[in-house]
Image (cartoon, rainbow, N blue to C red):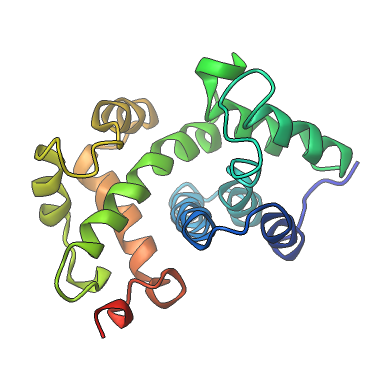
Length: 196
């Protein structure tokens, strides 16, 4: 069994299973956030990035979050392809309520903490007239945070609990993920190009 899948191999799996541009961008956002956290914790950046990139690769084909849906089906596919069990376990842990895999490691806790938050940050950027994430600040996200109708599918309580479980103050967590996404704004289409 291989120790680490490289990023190109992970991206090939993403593009094989995911046609949706928005879902691909979500996975790229989580990859960027995981890179930032790996650097923060002086952890294995490549491994954390692969986890962020792959965590939802099976969602489009197997959207039913159930015993035989995402991410259980994806874990079987990854296992067949020789992906390291630590990566598979981390991906399974971001859906504990379905898989029963509890989040124990920093990598597992970071993935869970970043997943939902990237969606709220993306939505916050897209409602700005500029459609540019560079114009988003932590305060912008916190303002939208309070508006429960805005991005109603994003579970704010889940993000709060996940940040606390990771041991990071919420504002610091939002800031780290926001900066990570700002660093890849053109890839995410959040560089103002959608406003033109």
